[in-house]
Length: 107
Image (cartoon, rainbow, N blue to C red; front, top):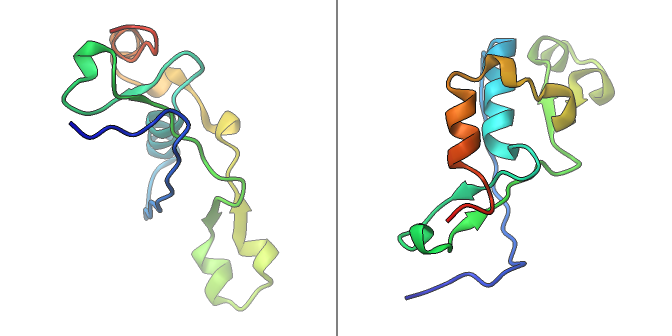
């Protein structure tokens, strides 16, 4: 068995195009989750292993492509993403069941 030790970190990029506001809210909620919730990954997750928390890096942003290719300043086409501004549980189908299943303390 190979395990990742507590506190280990990794970094990856997610790129997306043409999302509606609700779709972006769902994506950000699915990635960052709320306090007390965690993603469950790996074969031993039912034994209490495999709970992990993802977060957006401070330099994450949304690109306004119209402004980008119009040659405008970078500040006008890169909008920083603040996860708290996008969390809206009302757009998540089966929110209560997901909240129960993703409980970080649940085995």
